[in-house]
Image 1 (tube, one colour):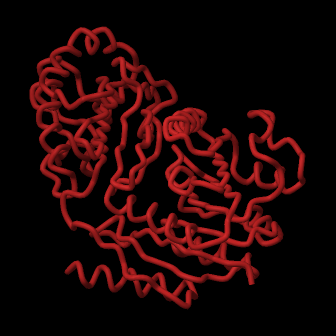
Image 2 (cartoon, rainbow, N blue to C red; image 1 turned 30 degrees about the horizontal axis):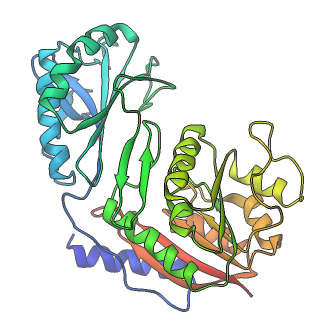
Image 3 (cartoon, rainbow, N blue to C red; image 1 turned 180 degrees about the vertical axis):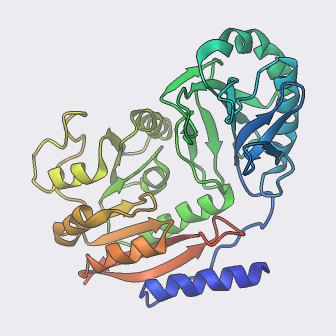
Length: 370
């Protein structure tokens, strides 16, 4: 489908679901070479491994030449495949339930540095991978972080709970054009399209700079993307994220930037509901809130596809927060959530084509209390 038609269809879909008086021009970005992340199933044989997907017969289909990947990813994947052969890492055979190497997960930073995660069935390959690591780093000098992720179960799960870091560096710096460098750990989330992610953060920053806002909560904050872009003189920002590793990364970045942003590891909904009780402990999993108390002037939410749900939407409706920035990758769950917050009305909205050549997109909405 022509790109112009893709964009117009996404715009029409978003406008049919979100009643905003102002729609800003869509952020499109490149239609090829835009992905900063490759998630490749490993198939084939030791002599001829495939990196891509598995077909209906569970045989490997090589997609190293995928046009969505950045040139840096494409080049590195070829060299990684050659190293897999030379290191004799046996691809996992799903049908036979044999072999070890399941997935290759590769992420590229704007500076061209790479993080490689090798998903394996067990630690049987650890010694071999460690002994062959110098050869890998020589073949792919852009690598900054290399890990083994252990996923022992025979099911369609991309990664396991155990991560073994093999390099001195444990995080991949994402030096964004916005002036903020985020730190990505092996299990941290970052948008797959760096250019559009930068536009997303810039849009939120532009909106907030035009408001009289002193305190901000960033719920589902990840490694602090929105929180760190919205921190500034006269503003106090608090981020909440369930991943402790992401919170550690965000805290380090805030310290480096010297901004007033604090972060808490915990469930976003549980934290908000407890914060609304003014003094209740959000959860036994983290310390008391490191903010000055009271409710925020503005809340940012960037939830997974299911949206924020009735509990958090209900809290936002009655919270007294004057403004909400809602970044969504699913306009249908966004519309359901907005219907539960009738006091918060859209002021401006924007579609961002984070995922060209699919029906998916990002939409960000600024809402103010009626």
